[in-house]
Length: 159
Image 1 (tube, rainbow, N blue to C red):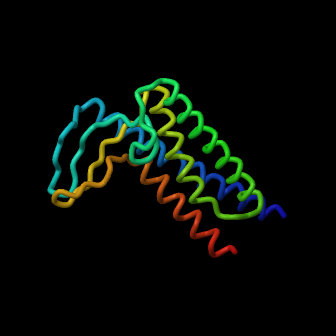
Image 2 (cartoon, rainbow, N blue to C red):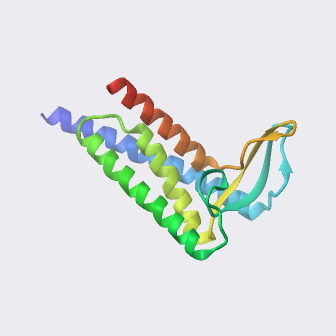
């Protein structure tokens, strides 16, 4: 029994470490972009930085300058994040792998910090090919998408 609880605490350590790593990488990259003024900074023909504050959700859906709409969208995102935390805790207690949930929660938490301190999510990474451009995003968005994909993968194989 003791070995099992040690393994549980060991895995919890790695989940917390993963959360902190993703959260801090996102915070540091956003700080760097905000303080170094990297608007319209082209690295190569595929990758550039263009600072933008997203007040909506993914790809600017529900983006609004209206404070009430912004507050409602932010509250909705906060509640979904709380729900994902509860879901992750239940899965963890049942011995399930929660790497996907951890990535998504870390990304969401960092984006919530942006909403509180900057009035919108700091997006800056632009991927493009010729005239085709992917919507502007950040490291937290990558963690959220990757986390949800991993979560879906695990749940598909578990069923």
